[in-house]
Length: 258
Image 1 (cartoon, helix red, strand yellow):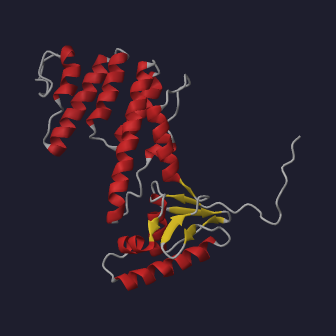
Image 2 (tube, one colour):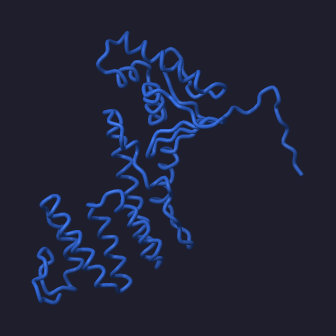
């Protein structure tokens, strides 16, 4: 048996975990820790910028309406409170010009982005995978900070594309149950997303469930018209047109059989 020596003079540093998907949370070795909203914002800003930020840039993003000297003072105060909250767990690495999150701090958004890359670039195994929990939630959906909007939308779009890509790949390999799980996860994230609806319809058709595919399309058509005043694209209509004797952008007439 191999014995790994323990360096008692330099014990391993505690690891902090930052959750950005769904709701914000900070977990330290002794449990979850509350942070004041201002301090949360500093930690989140550095968590989404993995390479770090210049002090001046961070202060300007966090306090855009304050003069430079006051925003810099506010940043120093928030960093001090973060150091107190972390205790022996160092969360921020900083010098006179630059700030970044310590490399040992785990961020669920970064883990989710790695999963997205794996799902879209690697072949799936023969075993039907489950939808990763990280891909079921948006990035801090209740936060309204302007510097968060583009990052949130970027993550939302990449995870939806990953879910749909996996759904199609699983359908092509005959794993219909798993394909449906990924397609429905995309729909839960965006109920009006046509490409996700098409994934579901294509699975129904691949299984020979034409009636289910038509009902699903018709439900989407009515919802889209009711909420946005739009009709499905020609690509989606053409997918199902061979199975109907009426235009797909019109509801069936009473007594008319499709």
